[in-house]
Length: 409
Ligand code: PLP
Image (tube, rainbow, N blue to C red; front, side, top):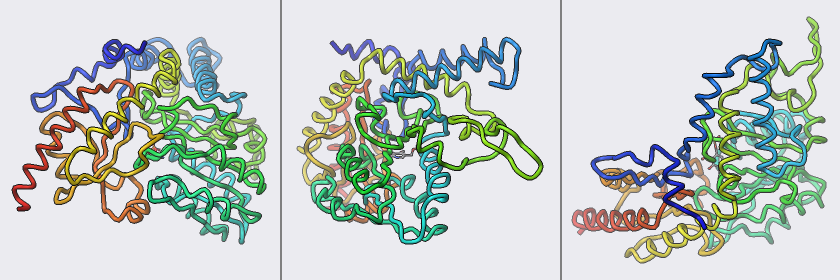
């Protein structure tokens, strides 16, 4: 039994009052709030163990190194990774994908090769590939979406072929709430001899993820969206593929031997972790993985599905509203627009009622163009949100409609 009141007790910030109203935090796709367990892990690390990792033989350095490596094991287990050697700490999804685009893409892509993405990608799974394509002469191709916001898998079959070297796809869309068939795309990629990269920024926090079952070669996620601190995220890569890649950043810790004119590289994952890493944040992310595992990702998914469906259903009743994305198999993201109200104005008005939603292009400008809107309003739910918060959202949206309707008429 999912005890929502008990879950909410774990998040101190949820007690905040904003503009005289209890905070309804519905901007979880942007970043999540942090449970006490994660906050304690951060302060505990700094109060008891802080030292630079790997370089020292003194007690604190050994403890800090053990805490950092334990965090790696925890996050690897959380993602179903068979081998923690494939788990690289980064600053987040953006850096993880850049790492692949530089260290794999720039080394191995050639003129005439193709990278197949989708038209729903976040800029962080698009711009790094544009940069890699500029340097290597590779081409980018895009799987379109159907009217309901799901990927056109027939087009995917057509696009993925002998020239494809990598398929990259967002697992769960941060705008449309679609859960994409990345397992099927991974099969298609592998049949064509290509690799599969999954942007898991919006799936790792919300769905049970098993990189082995997904069949992908790379999986990227951000700690701050899954109850962890900012400044840390992960790239999981199949060890054989990581071994083949060049380093991303050069410097301390990523080397085996350094000479004045050349260097050799450390084993994976250290080859990709140059300099002093975000150690405390990694420890915090380990604690976040523990917290999510204790709650059970299936329970988290079911709770969010219930809240997401309730929000979809209640918002659909608002006159003239457009909600984007499929009706079924959604995450807890609801993007919508109303005629005569700019999403920014709506978000500002909702803030007066203590309701935090996001408005804008959500770092998906090509998708906005495809949808024919400059921006949407987006409410995004997580494991601590309640039906009562959905009701407050709908009531405030109705109020905004009346308010702006008065100007429009
Ligand atoms: N991919 C998706 C689908 C996202 O929603 C986001 C963040 O909103 C990112 C990538 C980028 O994540 P970060 O800014 O943590 O690197």
